Length: 122
Ligand code: HEC
Image 1: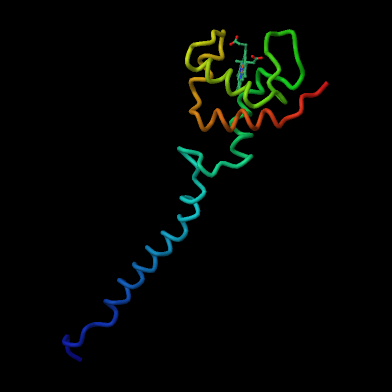
Image 2: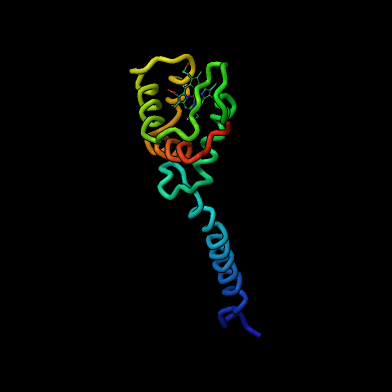
């Protein structure tokens, strides 16, 4: 036995490392493709529902006399216009100016379409 022959064992750890690295890349690939942030380009109804879930703390599906206007089932263009004008400061409000600033144009579009598709209850 001499030290001359290229030791087979040496190639194996490298190959194993490569396979491990490839495996890790493949495992994490679904996480990349499922990520919607920041553009929400492939947004789904679930994304829209998640965004809208933060509105339901104040806006209920029935008209109340507590100063929270009904936003469900309204035309999407009205909701969109309201959010855009709250955001720009053109329209004044108590809380909606601050809330609207938290959403970009794509999100406002998603919210408007989602809320318009909801049925208010009697
Ligand atoms: C903290 C309570 C609160 C939350 C949360 C909230 N709103 Fe509002 N919203 C209001 C109030 C109060 C008004 C009346 C305007 C004002 O005083 O700011 C209003 C007004 C509106 C209007 C105008 C309706 C009309 O008839 O002109 C729209 C549209 C609206 N909100 C959408 C939303 C959306 C979309 C969300 C979630 C992203 C949301 N709001 C979250 C309290 C809230």
